[in-house]
Length: 553
Image (cartoon, rainbow, N blue to C red):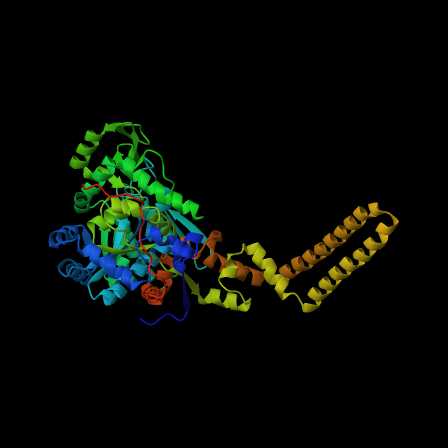
């Protein structure tokens, strides 16, 4: 489908922290924290050999039981990965309402594009696999969708709840009848286009009473992205639980050892001047357990385990027996989840957001402890959708996207000041220069009479400058009143690009854009994401773990 000329899709590299910027630059300081450079084709070649050595036909068929194809072609791609010794590019996200912020879309489409590129580079089947983090329990984050309406107003739609434990995973958070009222509230916020009715029908079908938040999210992802032939896996799928049991068991048996393995690279990151994304909690395992009190972190307490929330305790034998009998009660934390994923699935690369990229730097040795290598970590694309109405405002005031990060009142003052007649600016500058020169001459003469006059003269100069600034501010204020329409346009552009002071992709939801431009927008975004694979940067040496060697399971 041809790009919609009424929108502009701006794709940039992630630049949220120093670590992310250095990662993009291929800084050798980061070499020992990662498996290989994300733009180095040879790194993917090496990783493919490591993965292929671990996955025989039986393991491939077993892992396929956990995967849901989004289309008939996706089902064929899965078969090609299984039968053709293929691989996955994975990414994932918590089950956010209406797919959550825009960056979920950008992550998934980045994975689609990377998989297609790697398939050509390696001449082997490579498919995108999306992990639905159904076991996550951050209700505050998962329940919110921020919608921008046609009048450029933000609306925070939140799923009703929670009822009961606030640590209940999204797979067990059940939608009530009041979700229908929320969807009815959404309808009038969307533009009445040829796409709106179908979109609302999809949402109502996915987010129906009696379904879990995770189920609704997964179905919406499958529906919206079916044309990209993606594969989807639910973190709580029984087949996945069965295949990941050994990882959880090993983690419980060696949790103290693994804590030290994560602490060492974390300390090296700090020594290199980076802030660790996730703090290493003393005596904490990398596993959660769910009971009637909700999903809770398992901590070590002497020779026993204790639940962080309820205080319930287990012996090691009791924990192992529970894991054997009820594996669905156990789940990995943010550190262990990528290990589970790469153990169960033939994963070449993980497409990461900025926070994920940062915590991957902490866990390379944890992968080695489980006798596998970390996947190549590829940063997702950072995407901004610039609609025609927004582009007109930017062009009118000669602004670029970064300039819109400034708080609206500050940006408004700058724009108004930039638009003041040159004669006003020149007069203000001339007066300021004359004040400075006049008081400089006065000070030189006064101190010859009495050095103590320096203070009064300086204070008088400061008063004069303040008065001049007051006059300047009044001029600007009056200019603002004369340009209220222009400034309102500026504010509306700002809420589209940097709502609530944050990048668009971290706040706004995809639904209003799909209602306005149709599903073809997703194809336009995907086509705008360019995957760079080049050997121009120095090859990275790979994860360093000191003298640690994994003990056979």
